[in-house]
Length: 133
Image (cartoon, rainbow, N blue to C red):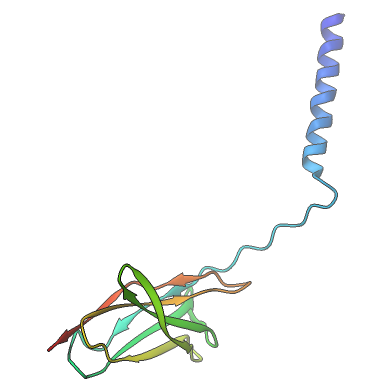
């Protein structure tokens, strides 16, 4: 009898603990909805430019296959070991953004989208603009 009573009390205690754990605290906030995945492509118009000339770096911000217009995208340049924002642009109706650069020496660039409440942040790959003297 003692064993069955112990099992019953133990079962009741475990059940009560489970109910309290599932209920959580009274002031608990709901988790925010996950942000939508985004992608950001990058392409340069020329592989090599002469010193003093310009190159065009473009990209497209998208979710699945749909371009995301009206969002700020940053052009970052590698300075030392860190990427630093050098320009900002607004994506067009279909998610495209474009930047004109005039590096004096070979430079690496990437595009960055910081995200918002609904859209996740993302960044592109890195392109290298080679400059011939």
